[in-house]
Length: 582
Image (cartoon, rainbow, N blue to C red):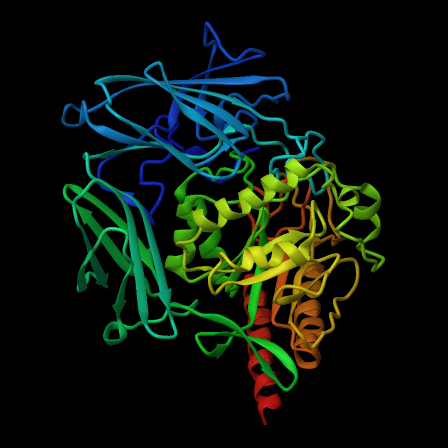
């Protein structure tokens, strides 16, 4: 199955712009496109009989392979490429944005290193690039592994579980650097005091010059001393970031001949108590988060969007429909996706990627209908009987938070979703809280609430949502809806899944209008509901409960109606707070 963007994908050069707007160098080389490819049951190969298009996983149509990968398979990748004369002999940083799950990397016959984990990015230093170069990657992926994060991947795809993603599924690129260069940047804006703290890890002895731009005007120049954090007062040039005004600053760090660009914005999301109920405030103003669940899947690219245009289309469409937030569901996106949210003013609820042993079908099939609790200290019942699995999850948590520390849009983190691999939430919550800055945390989204976290988080399907406040935390309807509408000629399979099915657009419109204007508005007025996350932005494989079809060809309900529904939520929220204040 293709998307409406498939025909425009250049298989030679699928992505040409720099993949990371939060750490961007001028001199880089994209290594996406055609690679040699082989699958066998050995760590080495003597031949490559196939071709694959990176960064699309071999299971996807855009990879031009479209083949299943077994747990005992080795995926062998090889890319031969030339370097411009100006960079021959120079040092380079080789970046991989995502390889699922384990891999070893070789450059011109020399092993650079290994990496484990299917969603986090990594890089290696190449001491000297030649005119002609050979990059080789050997990868393995056991989708059923209880150790590594897998999100919605399942070897037995169907229903809410999807086709696996294996091997390279993120951009691969080289950045050319001088002997002295910037290794890392940390930017911590403080909305309260209108200051930004900036530090840099560097390789070499040169000073680092930091220049801050506001709308292309230089507003600050500072030198960052070694191992020091500089704090810059921007009160005279202060501008807030919000969905209505997504203002961003540009920062350029220069170290000798090295030059790195990043971006940041000032925003502050907090919970405030009004009349005995916790409400959300952004930049000291009430804000209701009307969100969509976003799995980040595409029919042609799987976990990889087919093009930057496709990413922009999703975000532009939800903004046009009046939503101000997306819940990125158990997936880490490309940095260009977060930057689009930053530029266009979309708040993000970011899930950690779930892992653990296979989940109990009994729990999954009964918990949506019966409200019962499960002890998450006895980890086996929720898939955490293996200590290595718990250790890896915690390590991945820290790595994920560090990787996504730059986007302004990320304001809420989800620790566990529906008990999938949940363990010791009361212990894990403070660990996560210590590393996410001023972001809020949904500790147990949907099921098995342990009384910790910033949200009383509910998932309600199959019936009218009527969540109740606990008066201690912000009330969040973090999943609901899932209304399905078959769209002939735009479905992945004939076997479909949804939480309620409607035969035509008219009935779908009525159902959506009822749940928003009646049920959600009532929950706002009575219990201070502050977040709603409708399932979902698009169909995904068997699931036909998206506002858009899987190929993004059709927006199913009336988009003007959706705008009205969102407007009703925002107005009810502001009025509810005003009523309680008086």
